[in-house]
Length: 221
Image 1 (cartoon, rainbow, N blue to C red):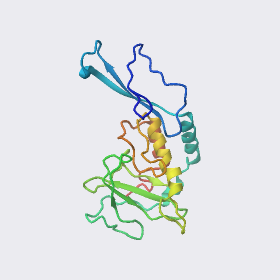
Image 2 (cartoon, helix red, strand yellow):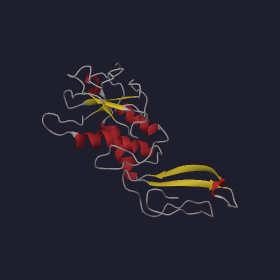
Image 3 (cartoon, rainbow, N blue to C red):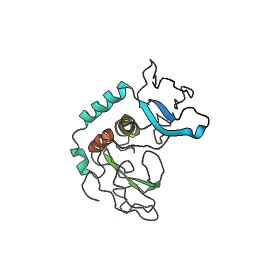
Image 4 (cartoon, rainbow, N blue to C red):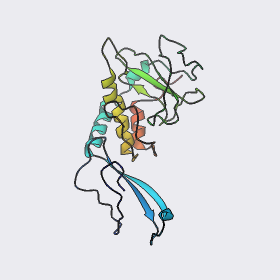
């Protein structure tokens, strides 16, 4: 069954899933939910296994690999303000000179994260995102954790920086998730703040993303 709005549920009699001739677009993979059923099939509950099949565009892989090459050096992140290990019950920043107040935000982009906090930019417009769980403790494991941002989404030197943040920090993350086989895409590609469903797998591409956008770039909190 194709589940990204492009096809109906179909029963395969030969066991071969045909993807079609059209290549998916970048960050818009073809997503299939495959159900394995006992035959004959008198009842719908005879499903004994399910799996997702994600067919990505070659452009997605090419753009992600180029991004990895462009950002292999992470020395820029060493100057970032270290995140706090916990946030205050009020959500107020313990140091307003370096970090903005925390915001309540629940999104599939950061599993299990309830609070989101962003640092103020350092020289070059770089910033840091930190995510916290329901107990206000810092999350340090992907996919839930926040990461360093080459471009802070806030205005830097009077110039809005959110499109650079989207293109060079958020889009590559979404591509990594999709290349790892997660059946996800952004609900709004222009402002990608949410995915259509939770991720299922953290793989090599996600780890490569974290290598270029570390969770604790300063090495401490």
